[in-house]
Structure formats: C-alpha cells, structure tokens
Length: 259
Length: 354
Image (cartoon, rainbow over all chains, first blue to last red; front, side):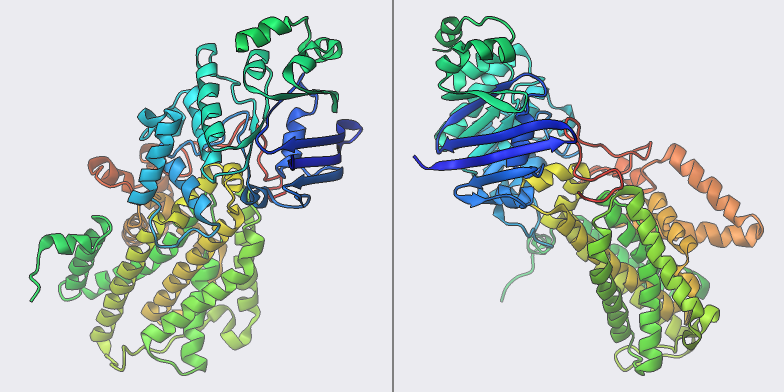
C-alpha cells in the first residue's frame, strides 16, 4: 500500500539533547496510528516536525510522495495534512460558530474576500452540519472561552477537518477531558474520520484509548521508536511495558475491553 | 413600472449600520448651512482625524498598535500638497486620490517588513518610520523644512468656491469622504478578511494551521489602514491649507492612539465619535486653560480608562445591542491580549515571526 506519510532518517536536536533520532516511519492511507511514549520521548517533536512547526535537524519528510521540508505549516495544511493540539487552539473571544466560519473561509482558499461577509447562509449551513456531526450544536452561539473542555477539543478537531484533509494528526486528543467524556469524544472523532476515510496519527498517554481505537502503535522512547506494529504485539513487548507504560499491562484485558 | 417598497430599500443594506450612517451623514451635511463656520471647520478636521484613527483601529482589531500612523497622515497631506504645487492639480477629488495612492504605495513597501513583527516591536517600528519621515522633511528645504508649505485652495469638479463657500464645500467633502470610507470599512470589518484578521489577533497559530498566512492578512489590513489614514491627511491639508513636518511627529501619532482609545474599537463609527469629542475637549481646554490643556486631556484619558475601558462607543453598545459588527476590544482592561497555551507562539521573544 502506498505511504501517505514517510519519514527518512528524521532527526531533531536541541543543543546536546536529541529529541528525535533517525526516525524512519511509513504510514499507509487509512491507518489509525497511535503514538505512545513517556514525557520527553519525542512524540510531540515528531508531530511538530511533520506539520512544519519545527524544522528537523536532518532527514526528510514525504507527504503523499512530496517532501514537505522547508514548507510553512499553512502550505502543509493545504497539501492535505491537518492537526489539532494538546491544548485546543481556538479563537477564544469568538463564538463557536465564528470559529467554524473562519475555518470554512480558510478551506475555500488562501485569499479571504475584502467585501464578501464572513457570515453567509451557505457557510452557516455547512457549519451547522459540522456541529451536528460532532455533537456540539448546543454550543454554536457560545463564546469559545465559555465552552467545556471536551467540546472545545471537539471544535478544535472539527476545525482541522473542515479543510477535508487526507491525514489528521491529533496531539493528545483526550488530555484535559474528563474520564466520562473521553470515550464519547473519541467515538465521535473516530466515527467522523472513518466516514471520511482520513488517515489518523495520534499521540496519547491513555492506553485504554490507544488500545480501543488504533490499528497500529508506535512506541517512542528517548527520541527513538522502540516498537512499531499491531497493538497486541507492541503492548505485549516487555521493553515497552518497562520503558513506556511503566508497569505490567494486562494486554488481553486492555484489548479485550476494547473489543 | 416597478413600485417602491421599504423592503427592497432594506435589501440594499447589509446591516442597520449602513442606513444609520447615511442618515447621520445627511444630518451633518444639512448642518453645513446651520452651524457656525468655526464648528464646521472643527468638524472637518475631526472627520479627517477620524479617518486616520480608523486606520489605527483596524490595526488594533488585528492585535497591533501603531504608534506611527502619522506617517501616512503626513504622506497623504504632502501628497496632496505636492500634487497641487508641482503638478498644478486643483481638483479636490484628484488630490485626495493622489494623496491616498501615495500612502498605499508606501504601505506596500513598508508592510512586508512591519507585519513580520508583533506587540511592542511593531509599535516601535511604526514609530521609527514616521520619525524617519519627520527627519527627512525637516531637512528638506525644497519642501519648506520645518515651516512646511501652503496648499492652494482646491476646486470641486471644476467649481472654484471662494470665502465661506469654500470652507463649506471642504466640510461637505469631509462628510462625504468620511461616510464613504465608513460604509466601506464597515463592510470590510465584517468581511472574511476583516474577521480573519481578528482571528489572527486571537490565535495566530491556529490561523496558520488552517492554511492561511497571518502575515498576508495583516499586510492587507495594514495597506487598508494606510490608505484611509493618508486620505485623512489629505483632507486635513485641503481643510487647513497648510502642511508641515509636525504631521509626522510622534506626538501626532500618540494623539491618534489617544483618540482610538477614547472612541473605542467596537464599531466603524467609534473613531469619529472619539475624534469629535477629542477636538471639542481640546478646543475648549485650550480656550479655558491654555497652559493646562494637555493636563485636561490626560485627566480625561485617565477617567476614560478607569470608567470606560472600551471607549465611548461602549456607551452606545451598552444601550443598543442590536448589531454585532465584530468583537470586543483587542486590548483588555489590563492591556493584555489572550495567548494560546500549551504550545508556544510562532512569534519569537523579539516579536518577529520565526
């Protein structure tokens, strides 16, 4: 299967610290990949390099066969790779609807009109459809700063998906979300991405979430990938249990619950 | 034959602001035959200042404070003056168009550099550019050095009024231009670009990851701001009949920021309200306490920040919550804007984009 994302010898150093070391990754279209690792393992550095936020010290990143090295994040977004953030990146003093309208304008092109209003019936209709898909309709007219964390996360992910990307990178989608909300949030997000055939790579600390939703796991430790494969084999790996998870994990139980 | 209906008239307007602006313009225009000449002159200059302040305000809505908007005020004024003096053009409309074009051209040249910077670095760079112009003008004896030069009385599409009629014509021109710009910028503020620049102020990182260039949005905004400010400068030159380097000095820019805070950033009309109130306070303060007028203005600003942090417009907005043209002031009560947490901004500590 063709790789939608491929990294070759991707390395990033911060002074003497090697945050990512010779990462060679191939992600096929349609995969749902979970990235796990303890704090400082290089997960977010990897996402930041892939999405153009951080330039790598060396190596190459190919998205759909094209190198994205040296491209601005906006150019990478326009190629079809979107992302959400660990802390939802929204426009806090705008309403949820206005946030969506700005995303819709961005998805229409990179030169917003001087005179055509942001708020048009067509865009409102599309925004309403997105809100219904993500279950956030009731927050439509609320200022983002007043919306609960779980809904904010959903709006953040919805905004990333407005441009109909082929790949979505999620940085800890359930961080800061209550235990009661996190599975509902992931069910909603995964339902939407599967419906649209979007390839997903997400960083997550919660093994229950990882086990339930991914088709493949990459385990990071100290800037390197120490295990990469189907959830059962990666989570059963003694090295992963010791260095990444930090305790013995009952894999059958984790995957069984997921099933 | 089609019949007239109020509903078809209503459809011509995108919001209630537009007919309200036209009504206000009609009232001010009618005032040309009713008000004393001194008041008409004061209002002419206030409308011109309002245009410059509008340039400051649309930058504030994008999260940037210009302490050098006098650069464009002065360029607009000198553009008009030089076109009249060197090219022999006397038509007020052509002169204003040339003054505005001069401001826009300068903004196209400076904008790419300035819009790479944020916060205090942007403010200081705008100030530096205006002071460079001031320095050049002061040293240019061909342009009258510190004295500047006079601008010949304009004609209006071939009509050359004299005496009070000329002052009245310039006043009406100011009302016309201010209304036209207010209508245009009202549409701009609710346009896709206008609202995206507000989004840039709120979270530049998100705008970038939506696929838009924050710098390009700010650049477009900067050029629009420069154009209206140059227009204000040109109008001032026509009204006062004189231009000098003080138009570019930093205290002039400070005055525009003062008026922007006085009026507020919530609506396209706010800068005009601020400019009129400022002109009235200053006129009476100078008349009643010639040695203390700056202190009077300072106390007024202090009181305003304490009691009306969102400017005089918030008095209107409080009583009339019918139309939302944008969002609240980008500068909070403490003068600090919201910043995204969890990931550092692409703007470095020096305020320049990485």
